[in-house]
Length: 106
Image (cartoon, helix red, strand yellow):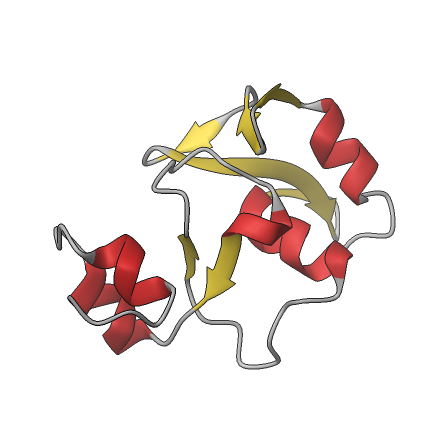
């Protein structure tokens, strides 16, 4: 993660709605992204993964991020969780995904 990306920088690009931080910046495939320069090239990074990393909650294996609040644009680290790739596929299109992310079985 770049040292310039902090939780305050991410929160500044969001609007606050209840407890959610709704991303107002660029998106890639409907997910929040931040463009950074690495080695002179522009690279897109997930704003949600950057928020988790800045909050110290990112896991070392770096799986995909799921939102517990069911808002794909939310960048609040309290609402984000990293899951394994297999679990992410299981969540796709599942109406009980929010409960499953919280560990509740329907």
